[in-house]
Amino acid sequence: MSISRKMGILVFCGVPAIIGGGILFAVFGHSFTPVIIYEAILLLTAGAFLSKN
Image (cartoon, rainbow, N blue to C red; front, side, top):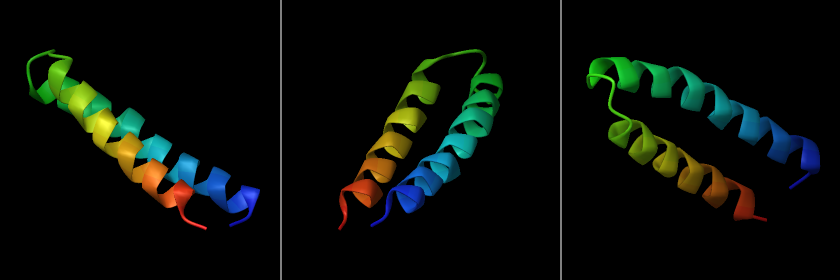
């Protein structure tokens, strides 16, 4: 997998992390726990895509 494709995957996962994190923070009454869980799931998913050859 080329470096440009890996960077594209990171951007593709980064946008939902920012937008989704803000939405979860607002919906769950200004609590960071759901945001941290959501970010961890996205990080694991992005890591799985990047570790593929």
